Amino acid sequence: MTGDAVTRLRPLVDMDLPAAHALTAALRWPYRLEDWAFNLMLGEGLAAERGGRLIGTAMGWRYGPEAGTLGMVVVTDAAQGSGLGRALTAGVLDMLGKRSVTLHATAAGLPLYRKLGFAGLGLLRQHQGVAVAPASFVLPPGLQVPPLRAEDEPLLAALDRRALGMPRQALIRALLAIAEGVVLKREGEAIGFSLLRRFGHGELIGPVIAPDVEAAWALIAVWLGSHAGRFLRIDVPDEHGLSHRLVAHGLAEAGTGERMVRGVPPQGDGGVTSFALVSQALG
Image: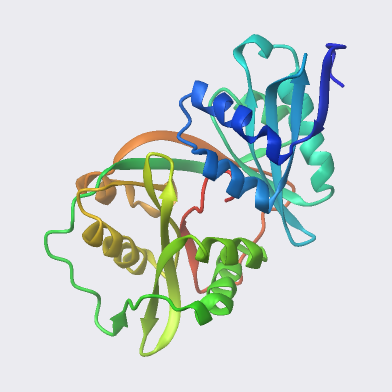
């Protein structure tokens, strides 16, 4: 319960998705109903209901016993300032238990998350626009970027875990059912990958897992070339310095967010890094 006696918190269920989609549409968040359904299939959440009407949501995703992510915290304008956002967020944190929890905060959400014990990790930059193909792009010597195969799933999940320090096999499996993908290989050995799927207003590049920035750019450039003239989005951590290249290829910066964690940040085992997210909610 929140401070308002007529507001009820309960589990978020499939029947809530059209109303949840309406909440994000009102905020101009570019989620389709299908994107909401994908998130709920992989995670769990809370719904805030008042008078039979959905007025808020929050969701969480478990990645093994030690890590998780939090997102889709949405509250209607009429319920702002009532403590509902805090109640929803705290409720999902309770569901995630003692896990280290990461999220991507808007400027409006920063004060709340700081009060709940989250600390900043750095800036996230969202880029989107009509893609422009690289004028002349040549793969670095020794690298190949073949299309992924169904049997590559365990390999991709292992690379993802090395990069992020979280077991996300179920997420990778679900993505491969709806995404195109390429694998980065050096002398036949897989050293990275990137996926592209339908999302929001167009298509989204992510995740991008690679050993270094130039390899990551090779994995991104594949999609800029093959999908030139189409609306693409990608969310990249600021520290990798990819923003200027993305802007030069039609993907303008559309916003920023603060990457935050409560607890000890998950650590990969080195060798590969995450250069683009699956989404700001899923990490």
